[in-house]
Length: 207
Image 1 (spheres, one colour):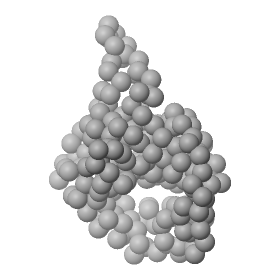
Image 2: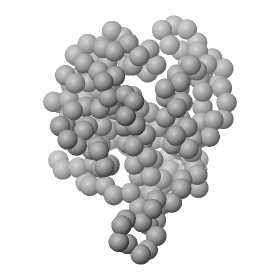
Image 3: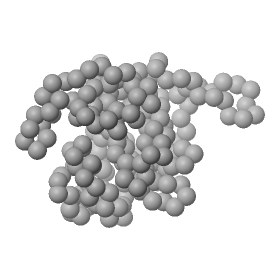
Image 4: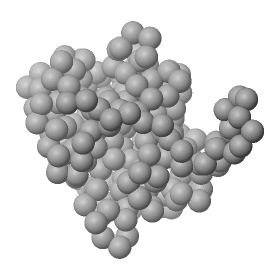
């Protein structure tokens, strides 16, 4: 798939670029990111360069993972990362995908993850044809679960010993979101019609 760029009031979501490697490396030095995600630990600059230079473009090209850099519209700083993963399931009757995200520590507590995810979710439902979106997090990751709840994910339970983290099997929380779970977006000011709930604006990413 040709990469796309999404936009919200405060954020731009675009595919990662090689120039993002230093910011990704810096963000992943914060202990909570390797603790709760699958990024390597310790996380070196080579890991960041491999992620932005190889993993991200391959994911878009092969339609396996769509990674977005979440950046501020005001100063271009890296706010976090967000992506749709396990896209292989889109090619099955289940038509499922999984939402993943992390936020740099200095940008937490401002609602950025929820704002960005709402746009990615609507894009996934409307443009990719996702019929069931899942959220997974290691049990205990309350920050991630708070974001998922605000997005409307229904908590479905705990998958026992589902994942292996640093050699130890750990429980995983799971939630789901369906297109019918989303509220309709309000019509823009001055518009007399009702905006379609799947009418998420996006721009083709050049290059």
